[in-house]
Each structure stands twice: as C-alpha cells, then as structure tokens.
Image (tube, rainbow, N blue to C red; front, top):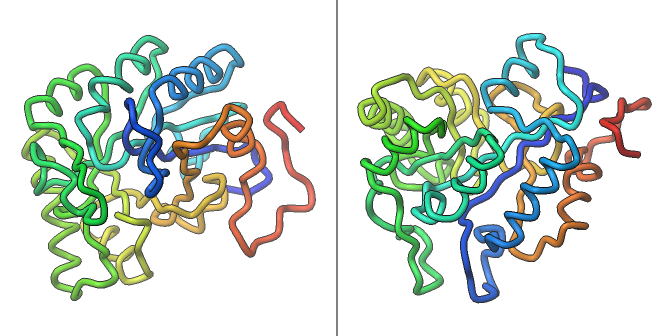
Length: 256
C-alpha cells in the first residue's frame, strides 16, 4: 500500500489499570483513567477503530482504508485487560487483539526480571470467555523470548508451538503473531510466515502503511506518561519510520 494512502495507526498497549507512577518500563503501563479518555476521544471525534483483520484487508488485499483508522493491540495477555480495558472497549464496541504468551497462560510476567512486581496473566478460562465476547487473540511465542537470541530450532519451536497451543485453546485458527520486544530479523520473519501466520507485528514506530510486507507491521507504543496531547501526536505525526523520508504528497486523515 502506498505510504501516501490514508493512514492506519496500530496502537500498542500492554497493561491497563492503576499503577504507582512506574519509573521504568513505562510503555508497559497505561493508567485506566487515561485509557478511558483516549477511547472517549476516539469515539467522539469519529475515528474508525477497526480490527486487525480489517487492517490486513486494507493493507494487503486492496480494501479501501477508512479515514482516521486505528487498530488496538495489547501485548502479553495480562489479567488487568479483562478487569480494566475490556469493559471500556466493550462500551464503545471497539475491537481489540490481545497477544498471548502461550506457555505462561494463568501464570505471571516472569520475563520481567528487573522489577519485583509481576502481573498475573489471564487464565485459559478467561481467554475463552473473552473470545466468545469478541476479543481476538494472537501468538506472542511460548515464553516471551528474544527470538534472534535463540537457536533456529528454539525460535521455530517458540513460534510454531505457540500457534498450535492457542489454536487448541480457542478451537480456531490463530492468524496473527507479535514479536516479543519487537525483536526479529529476516530469518525470524520467514519462520513466522512458514508457521502459517498471516502477519507479524513489530515495535517499529510508524503508521502501518509503511510495512514492507505483512511480517513487519509497524505500531505506535502508548506509554504511561502519554497525555492526550501526546496521544494525538502519536496518532497524527509519528507516521514515518526512523531513517525514512515521507512521501512528497501525503493524503491526510482529516488533520493537518
């Protein structure tokens, strides 16, 4: 898709809830009050909050892109998504995709080693219940590992088995993959494709239109410190990947 087409912003969240002003790993947290205001802004200002399925169809299958298109994604599958984020999303009828660490379902964020507080992860029962209510789920490996630091066999297992285990849990195909830490290379992206996923989500900060292929989808990280002004800046200004030049003529999505 031309980068000058109407933009699709895939937003990346992790935990939503009440937190005591975290000093590190701030992109892992979003205060529920700010999250509520962000979702209200999207609703009242007429943004098109679309599913990852719809975004894929727009980016790679020729479907027209709606104005002010936004996709909401949540990494890790923390229990506070069910408690805090989902009721707000449901009230606005906003679709969302949650990426699960397949071997740690029902456990906690044990991969975060430099802070004592570990966040509980959703159980299989919670995941199935949310799935029935419309939440979409994707794979985030088995153990939340840096895939480029694994041996090829280890990386392939983390990718392939995360897909099969989640499909067993949900009873349907799991099509979307998210790279833990945004860590991937060409070999890892090829493994994701060969495993049968249709796309891979990265931590490249840009509009999704700049994806070189379905396995390098950019996203915009929402962090604990983001005010509504900062949120709007990410939606409407943070569109071009670092090191790339914007197109000569950019189609706007309703804002300068």
